[in-house]
Length: 463
Figure 1 (cartoon, rainbow, N blue to C red):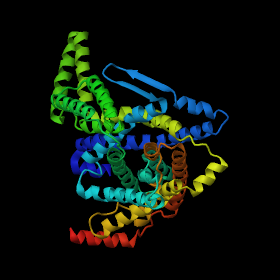
Figure 2: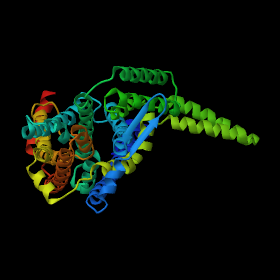
Figure 3: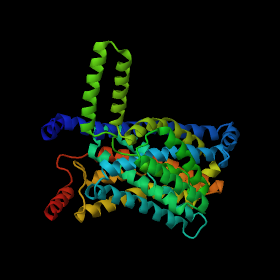
Figure 4: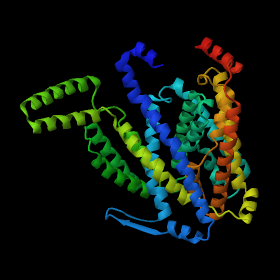
């Protein structure tokens, strides 16, 4: 493949593509895969802790009162809410960066490439929501329809990674793009349907801060400290506005520049000049000039990495290995007793969530993908048949982080929240095991799917 790239666009072009697009995607996927293991450990710790003799200490910790007074605004929250409303902003910021990267240069960058994962994501959201609604229509728990809509990127990518070569690489890219589109849909659902009241004054402050950051960005201001300070104020305004504060992370991510500060031509010219300056300073023995040239080279090199890539690389490990596991510990703690399990087995909340994730996800993803291909609107990924798409849909039923997040927004009643958590945990386990076994059995054959070939032929004839 690399030789083909070399012959097509030359060695410099290949290095540019690999540096700008391939390696960032590989690093992100690797972090998400390994982060899934840490996330699982966090869930296990929460379950073990809340079902131990030290259960009360678990609740006492996350109900600890926190207060923040910066004169401009005051915030009083429990530690558990601070994790969900504060730390998770960084998680959603990284998710927003990934969404923007996919929209700018990834699988969602053009209508032709985006239609299949976006349509599959929509089907994978609609199917679970309808199943949950069927179980809970007309009841006080109907508001939880958004819970089974989410796919957990960390777990889903982690499972496919563990399956190794048994899963075609294009299928992994498809699932990652689907999960990103799914996250975007989940963010919209949170912003639109899980906002109870709005403060116009706070929204006005948020809009003003957003406009200021945009102006600074267009004006070439690059100091991260300035944007961090304004970002904190923007988060506080969003928190006071009634729109969930984590949406602030996504909005800030969308403002993050996705292009380097310098073009290739400017970089080459400036680097040649600095190398000459360094060589002259070295010949003169001028150590200070040498250090100045090196510092400018370092600044020039850092400017060739876009702010989006730089922030994603720096923050993704923190969110994957620290923030999301802390979120799991704070939210996955469910007392598992005989009575709880009996109640959950007949609870419409548990059944709606579990059936929505285990059955609604794969059915919705498969049907919308099948329709798009049959209608000639899109093509399936290379070396991938409908069997593999169904398996990816099963894996997409692992809805952990965002599902738990939406569950916390849906229910104030602890019993309903615990029932939703039981459904999420059970369904995620079932979806992961069944999806893995299915994909192992449905490995692509030499002949591939005949329906796929026929659909591709029709699509080629139509376009």
